[in-house]
Image (cartoon, rainbow, N blue to C red):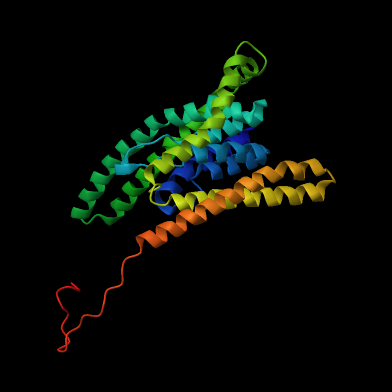
Amino acid sequence: MIEWWQILLITLYAFYQILDEITIVSSAGSPVFAGFITGLIMGDLTTGLLIGGSMQLTVLGVGTFGGASRIDANSGTVIATAFSVAVGMDPQLALTSLAVPIAALMVYTDILARMSNVFFAHRIDKNIQDHAYSAITVNYLCGALAWGLSRALPIFLALVFGGPFVASLAEAMQQGVLKVIADGLTLAGGVLPALGFAILLRYLPTKRHIAYLILAFALTSIFITLFGNISAVGAATNVSNSINSVPMLAMAAIGFAFAYMVYQRSVEGGSAPVAKNTTSAKGEIEDDEL
């Protein structure tokens, strides 16, 4: 199970990560960083990065437009990584059965923290009118405390009291009656990163820059194929790996050629005509140039 010092370090990180996300923004409050830190504390960096990276892709296109609350992918990553390593749960299963539901539930603590900070913000406004500058610092720190506890307290309680429940749930999903449901959740977990990309592409000007999208996909495929062949050659003399990589390389080359043609067509068709020099003898610009 989870040791007391691991609970302490994870709780302290949970307190800090939300403050970093709303102030410093050093990426320490991102899901992939949360998975890295929690995996490092739990002694399984691979599991932490896998869950954190998957959650990062899941919320890739989710934004807090207008100050709205969103799912707390960081807290979901922390709890899912900790219990996945502690009870030996499959990372994909932990992602779907723990990370995503917990991230959704943490919306309520996010709202509570925002409501608390509205109270402290009004007190700071009153302190400014009264020129009580020392009280401004106190209320500012109280607001930071409310933000930190909104993440640290639920995670602490989950790590301390949720161990037996998560252990029994993991056993039932891996070997018991819930294995069929677990297999379905694992399959759904593989779709979540694609969902994040779809949401992101929905808000980006994809149609206008479709050539760049195809070009990026082609280049990525080519580099994956090249690095795959290099690793295959360096590992052993298994020729089948290189042969199986040839179709992917051909698809990447076709995609690159198609992207280049689309890009060239957009440049040639969208270029504006060059204005003629219609300056009069007096140095004035004629109406047709305007």
